[in-house]
Length: 450
Image (cartoon, rainbow, N blue to C red; front, side, top):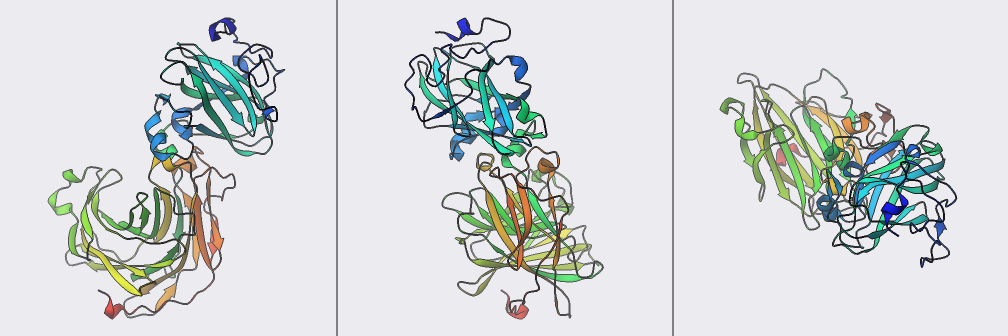
């Protein structure tokens, strides 16, 4: 039976015994042990009050490349493979019945898809070539938090499965607070960035050195992760997972000239490279401010605690500051020079120290990532090292606007931790303070640094 014969009424009623591919209806061959959506409920478009854009809230399950290719601003498009399951996420604060629907169209012919939420499943047949609202059915939300709707292609007579632009939701489970990405889809798909804002021992101190450590636990080295150890006013320094085969140690300094296009920076505002380590690439960066970038491809490992050391040398007579970064690998017990940059129009020691965790690949926003941040120390010229024991947890605009709420930070072991993305449902409040245990500074011979 074609969809247009079912949806000829204005309200697009869904009747339990109509052959829309309901599990167990019209002789469809399904697993009899599967839970089914409520087949006795008649839904109308009035029961589907919230639109969740596929463009900002969906991924191809466990497939980063397909997620970045098939998910566009129009939703899921050019969907051909049954292996590409579409996963769409939304957060609800209530339990109970949730009504589901789709805004979709077929390019040609008919398609059968399977819709699943919390092990409740329902097949539907689509044949409409004009985009319309397709009520699916009523499902049960058994626990507040993030919900994942999985849509699987079963069969199609066309080259492609339907184009789906919106998941529609409604019902008693949506009567409370609901969170999902409404706009800024690029940032929403990347997910929230989370930070630790450190408290200096003396806010008026002249700190020349900043040391900290990062440990990425096994299984948390997710593609697209940037584990930033030493952040400060003017730059940052940390490690990344750039591909399945490439990892980097990255150190960047922003130009004081505000632009996202490094080619427009006037000569007197440009970052100058002073020196760099072996095999270190240096160049320009843009898009999120502009400046000087350096990185070395380095096979850092999970479960290993790496050291990060940055130096701040103001040159007040020239109104410039030199920033230098060193990376320590405990497995070979060596410090590596990454690079040293000179920033014009700047006279500063360490200011606003912080760490962060972010995902920079939108298709990887479906996966969780976490790291441990510890042993933060600072040092003034001619003085002893001082520990930084206190930090506040903060997050970016994606989290502040409640587009994504999968973010956490806190204490783990002797230090701090940050966790984000992956659609876990427990959050840490903005500006929550944390105090780590006092730890022993690893021996650093500043005179022997490369």
